[in-house]
Length: 400
Image (cartoon, rainbow, N blue to C red):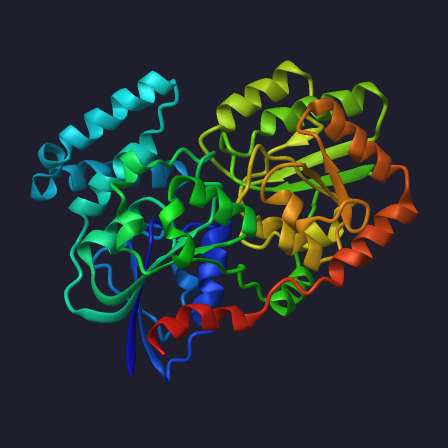
């Protein structure tokens, strides 16, 4: 039986983690002995890991990394890891060198700066594997490249590598130690190859696996909107982070309300930008119109009940949330950015808009006032074959 190790940074409620769980479900336990190591030992999605997968973490905290409790635990873990094995002294030259580079670029990314140290100071996994897979950029990839004994190594790239803030100085050329790099879309692949052109022969596209039948089933479970509202409901699912740029959506909502639209916008997600976004919502007088209910375990009833799904972000890799909304027949408005434009066909199953409050509001108005177009887009979206389990062969063929 072949032994496979998969490493991921955290296991919270997010797109890449959702796709990983579906990948794990499709690995035959009769053929593969699969182990999972969560680098930071934290995340609420651990309860959904299939029973046949062995969890290697000696200690694990199942609270969300985005909750107040989870953030406290994460800070303690980071400090502990920096102290373990003399990591803070060993990695100081690396961190200082890259910090100064970030300061020069006026783009400081603390999480990117720490991933190498987290990989070095993490628990070590003993034993040999036929295949080791890093399922996220940063810490997981550094860990697999440098500290795992395996015949073959693979790494997944889920984001626009350039826009996300990665570079070779941070990576230490770790991808040169990887046998196969899987990008989740063609655009993600090309962005990555701008940084690592010599990896072109080892790079491939591996589309996210998604269980569409499960999504449709869970959409029918109790849940969804509980407030009393007789207007149009707009929904977005995503973490409250800089990448998602929800301040633009808030400004778009201001335009909609000022023009007399009877709409309410809901963001299902949590993140470090909550306080900043709440302040902007209050400043623009949208406290009853632009709502931040937080993350929910089952967002699918909301998607099924929403009049419109909007995904206006600065950049994407390949959004699981868009794919989920399409599965449930949502009419969709997305920003015209990398990742999004591979998923939505303009005028067929959604609208692509420039990433400005004015254009997003314009796209929303167009669909809200054209019921026939909303229904046509939703029907086209629901009929898309989004996921193909045959994709998994690209990974498993490495140890054929």
